[in-house]
Image (cartoon, rainbow, N blue to C red; front, side, top):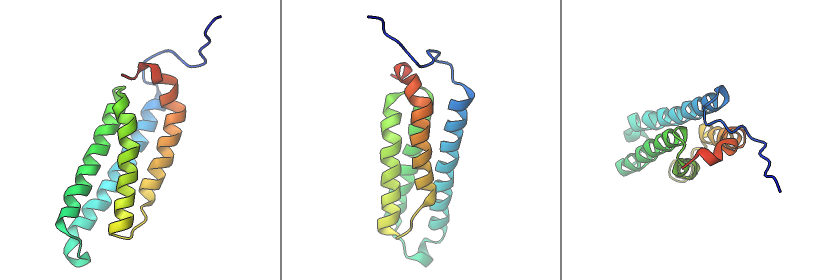
Length: 125
């Protein structure tokens, strides 16, 4: 029986892949900007310093996950959404803030996964 593939078998990154990656990186950087803004106001908002070590580490690891995805590494696909959800819940629990950038980023990742990652899954290592 023949195996049919409905996906493009070209490992080249097209405009859809690159634009989805750019949108994910944009919203990740926007989340980082919110964290920097909170850091600049941490004395006024009474946020403990340890929180920023953790949240900036999560931001850096999220960006690393995106870069790994761009270079076709499977660990980035699992790392990015897990860290994104952790980032969202840390803001929600410790600061009582609902980050729409994180929610939008999660929806973008879902769309990115369906439209850009799944067709190129066999190229991921």
